[in-house]
Image 1 (cartoon, rainbow, N blue to C red):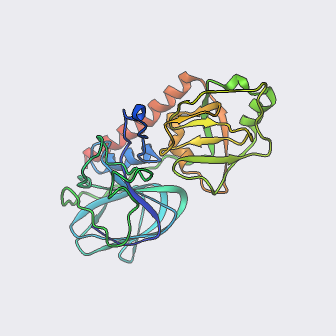
Image 2 (tube, rainbow, N blue to C red):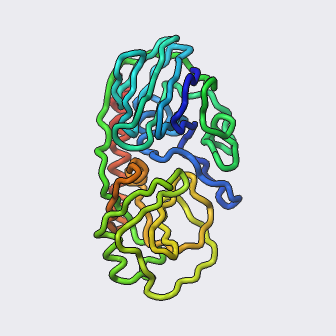
Length: 307
């Protein structure tokens, strides 16, 4: 397939580059892993098959072969030639047809998954794009006009659709190691007030702003330490930052909480200027919610494999 136009931030991503953080190499990968898994399940792919992650703009693609594909994650206004197509449905395209994604109607990140996957050479056991270091994916960068991507196989699958996970601004977290370093009023504010996503946010971190800044009960001095996706850091000004897929491998800010794995994708789909609200849950509940997400993926797999 060939990229005709690309004002969107579009890159090749899989579930991430694991096992190299001790070497200073970040995870990268998709912002919404559950959306990727849903798309791959619908396409009868392995869960980690790479997709094109699309955000914040238009993308036009011309198919150079017969391809079955789907769009998951954010709901995008999308057309195959001049026909509007739905998200979370298998779509069959023939060579010469054009797919145009205009804008996200709900959410931030959309995933274009194809049956059989894209033919891309992995780097450090992943094809995810490391934009900062410039490797992985397609030449280590965002896609642009005239780029061509090879798919592994031509295909035409039965047309079926599945339900998407309901979006929500309520994000569940577990307490982090420095939770008790914050004042009681700050702990309360963390859970009760809305936190607006700032436009300076990106794949590295989501910067939030609330009416009441978080305060420490006593001075906190920390050495640089390992950090990972979902951790909620609190810089001195008291406005939280949620580390996302391209987050750094080490950090020195205290952490009040960590977004549970089941809700990282929901966090990723919050749009600039919109607010989220945090709810602290137990580790046991976090694990139960992850099992529910996995059950959702398993249900898609079962349905897709029957069709």
